[in-house]
Length: 310
Image 1 (tube, helix red, strand yellow):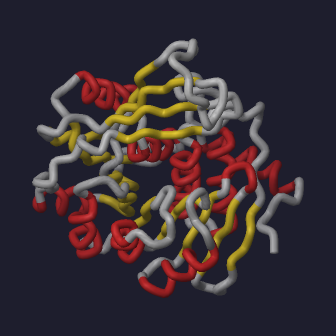
Image 2 (cartoon, rainbow, N blue to C red; image 1 turned 180 degrees about the vertical axis):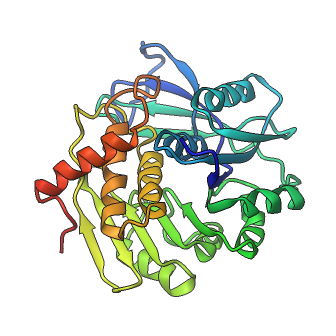
């Protein structure tokens, strides 16, 4: 495990209430009998931070949480995994969501948009100090991370961000994409993923844009050659039953490769393998992938001819 800060993760902490439902969309009914409903810490910034730490990287997480039971869950998560966490207190409380999960592992998330105080800002001196000791910053699209981007850029850090289910038009997401060197996003809500990828490259400073497409793999656009290339999904070690956290695991795997100096193709492969691993159990059952397992499974996929496609 590293004792230095390889990655400064900003934002994205919170607690999800997980509800397993018979199907999605869920038909209207007065009530459903469901398995145990559980509240677990682990929204996007949490997932990336824990995933990176499990891959042996030094991680510092900075975000606002509430002085509430959900905040205690977030603190406990990072204590268990050895993630250094600077928690600032907000009157809005810890961010929360309800995730409906069907039998195929697909997810529908309901986010509580009231858990954000417009007045919250990261202290500039604190942010500058943390940035000065880091190699890279991964910035969640949660408030108030948008205001931190100039400070991170001034500190000379490379920056990554995940736009999640961006629709290709929302200007809020573009503010993050314009300042990032690596941009991740899902194909879920994109009417034209190729146009969205090229828009990000044309507008901003990104060198790489990655669109994930679940069990279908995804696409990568590298400014170095200008081609949009499809990549296949990785083979999970056991049947996929829950997609919660798969995107965050992909980001962690990719950044692990990037910070090790691997080429884009290898970074994407690491991301796909880490994402597939995350789908093989519930959030409490799956231990984030370690570097030896990641490299071993990536080598198997390489030998099976699962490199980037044309």
